[in-house]
Image (tube, helix red, strand yellow):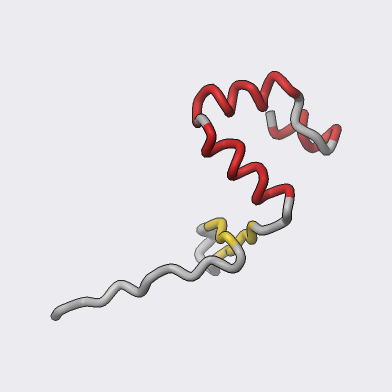
Length: 65
């Protein structure tokens, strides 16, 4: 799938339908965030990757120890 997207810079309809079937409305919402360029890839020095939604503030975890 990644190769098809990189070649054409778009996701074929059959892949979009598969994503919607597997993930429901979450897939549509996630793709909308990608279309609006609201997702940032963060890479650590160790090579780990995480995607972060821009403008989203997560609650802090507080330890009682």
